[in-house]
Image 1 (cartoon, one colour):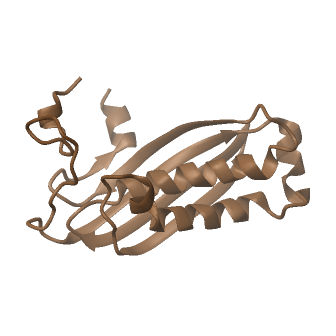
Image 2 (cartoon, rainbow, N blue to C red):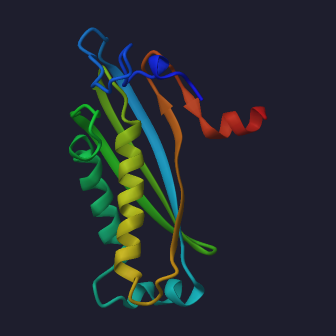
Image 3 (cartoon, rainbow, N blue to C red):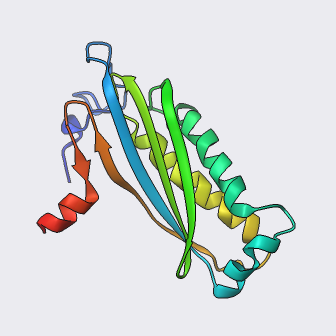
Length: 163
């Protein structure tokens, strides 16, 4: 586990703080995150007939809205001027795969915005389908890729291929 002094949101005395990014260059930054909502076959089959509306479309809108409000939910997150947010939902074997992407031109990245979008979209699928089955599982909320900034590019696929 890293020392607190090495984590950017902690000062030398271990106090949490918002990182000062005012000295960083504004660059184009992008990120993609995903989540998986494990749904029983009966719930998947019932998705088109949901009396609350199309759960996947509602989840898409909820994810986009969540990305724009990330700084209100995550205490040390900077409010960002997002230049793009997209949330896609796809029915796959065993559930729904959610992919969120975002972009900005600024001094800090959009990883938290995409992770928040994917997580809230997954929670919305749960909310829209929980009347059919309470055993729905949300799993694998994770960063898939990011670009820009001092730390450069990250890709889960490239990291997985290296191991």
